[in-house]
Image (cartoon, rainbow over all chains, first blue to last red; front, side, top):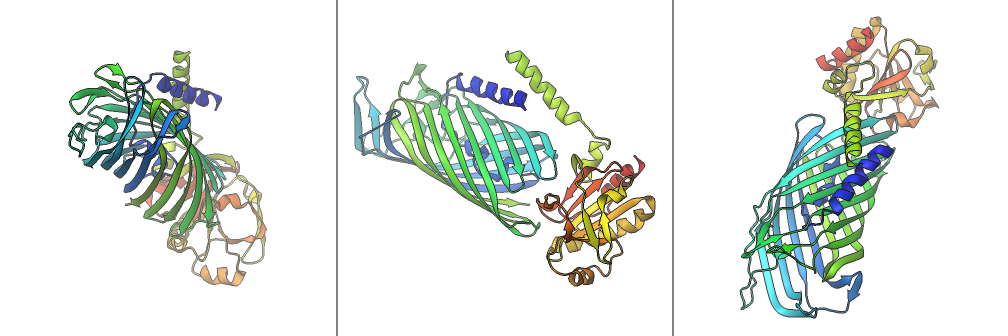
Length: 324
Length: 174
C-alpha cells in the first residue's frame, strides 16, 4: 500500500509541477459521489452543474470588488460501456451555457476595473472527451472491498472558441467564457475506493495535460490541471440491500482543483491559474436495478489564485444515471 | 527515483492482475463470481428441524453457502436454480447450506421453502457474523475444503447455468 501511495504522490507531483491548466469539465467524473467511479456494465448519465464566480481574489485574500459575475451551466451526457470486467470506455458530451454579467479585468499597470455593462452569453456544444478506465485491482473480503483504477482519455476541440460579447464592442469573450478550448488535451487519472461495510472512502486524481488551442483570434493555452478528491459515503438505508430495493447514501468530501497559468500568444498570463479547495456534502439515491440519482453542493473553503482574478463562490451538481 | 516508482507500479499491476488462488480466475470471472481469499468465519445455527449446524463440521468438504430472505423477490427467483444444483451435485460432495436472514419465525421460512430439498438454516437462531450479507442479498459463497472462501456471487444467479456449473465442477475436482 505504501508503494501505491508513492505512485499516487509521484503522479500528483508530476502534474502539479508541469504547470499549465484549464477549467476541467470532466473532472467531476471522478469526484464526489459520481457512480461512474465504480460502476460496471453499460448506461447513460446526465449531469447538470451550475457554477458561480463573482468574488475577486488576490492570492488568498478576498477583495472588496463587486459587479462582475460569471455563471456556467454545464449539462453533461456521459455514455459508458464495460467491454470487460476491468475495462470501461466512457464518452462525455457537454452542452454549455456560459453567462457573463459584468467583466472584471486587471490592467497592465496592475489596477483593476469592473465594467458592469459588459455582457456575454454563449450556448452550445463544449469539448467532447473519450476516456477508458482500467480497474487493475479489485479485492474483496467479507466486509471490505477495494478498487483501484486508472483512467486515460482525450478531450477534443469540438466547442466553439469565437464567442463574442453582447455589448457594443463585440470583442471576443475571454478564453474561459468560450464553449471550448480549441485544443486537444490528454486526461490521466487514478481512483481508489475502499468500502468497509456501509462506509466507502474514495479518493481520485485526475490530471489534464493541455496543448495549444485558441480563444477568439489569438492562440491560447490553458495550463495543466489536477483535480483531487477524498469523499466518504455512508449507506443510511437500508441495513440489508436487496437487488430490487432502494438505497440512500450521504456523502461528504473534500476536493479541489489546481490550475497552472494560461498562455496567450506564448505569453504567460499572470492573473490565471491557482488552487481552490471545496467541501462537498451530497446525497445519492439508488433505485435498483436501473436508476441512480445524486445531488451535491460544493462550497469553496480555500482560494489561492495567481495574481488577481474571479474565484468560484459555489457550485451545485445533480445527476441521473440509467443502467441498461 | 521516477524509474524506480515506474518499475514498482508495473510490478504491482502485474502482481495484482495475475495472482490466482487455486481456481482459474477466468472461470470465476465468466461465472460472475468475485474472487476471495479468506477463512470463512464459523457459525452455529439451527436448521428447520431444530438441529444445530456449525460450519466447521463440514471442514474437508466444499460448501455452497447462500443467504436470502422471504421478503427478497430476486432471492425467490434464484432458489429453484439452487435446488437444481443441489440435486445434481449433492452426491458429489457439495454441501449446500441456505441461510434465511429473516427475523420472523421458523414457520414462515418453512412454508416458504416447502418446495425445496436443500438444508435451510435460520441466521437469527445462533451466532453468525452479519458481514456475510452486509453487501446485500441474495449472496452466495463458495468455501473450499480448507474452510476458505474462494468466491462470492452477489445478486441472483442461475446456478443451473453452464458457467456456474463449470465453476462448481472445477472446485469439486480441485
